[in-house]
Image (cartoon, rainbow, N blue to C red; front, side):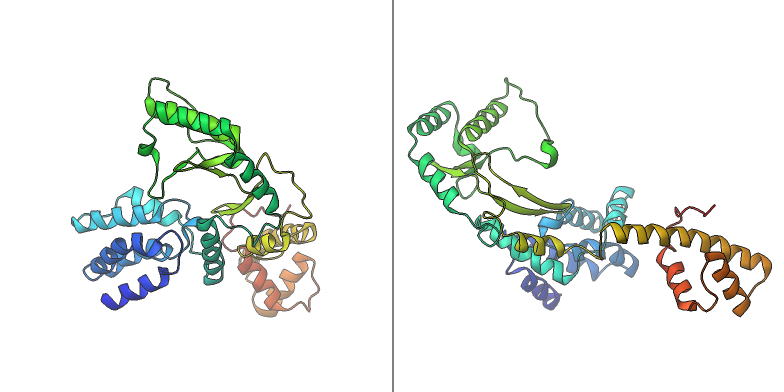
Length: 325
């Protein structure tokens, strides 16, 4: 167990956000548990375990929380329930090593708030940062917030208070404000303060100006251009670098021609499925079956049998392919 745990820790040592540290206990519990569990149960946990080494940027949910809960259930001698199994079954295969390496490197930049590898024009940020750091009204408003609330309660270990994060399409987990709840009022006041001064937060008494940022999410790539930023798409962004970062997860070629080709292959696969059934019904085998399939697909009789096999294999798990009329 010690050797396996050490190897796991080594994989995570260079990761951002102290990943090796906060994954340590969960990995230790996992290795201790699998020594006592039967192979089928270990196999059911394998997907969660493998996702522990995927950069958290790509997690669709907190994989570690689910793994730890599964281990707690198993430690008590119980079976995983339907909710555990559903989460495990729906989780796709982990991204490959090339994706994980690229995203892990991106996370190191995100952790430091450095986007210079993707953004060219830092002068626009510096200009506005100098302006807000010397803005007396900002200081006055921050003093009022500190008088009204114990801001220390809302700081993280680095002394940072962050505004409420925005999400795709500006959909927010919660948009309500209960004025009778002190915490709700603080967050509303702090969000309004950050909006006025284009901040993503405060670190102790220093304003943290929004940057032009590029961030990966489990579902795509988001580019955030601050409202104050006079955006020049040619000069401000390293599009090649962003495209390379985004494409690391893209498989296959795309475009109108490829879409049309895919649609045609799907149509042919629908025909082939029906032709295979007809060939069985007619008792056709070997060369006669091959000629029958080619004729049905509108292909020349000399078409390689491998082409038909590839078409059959490509769509074998897609029962939704419609039968050709």
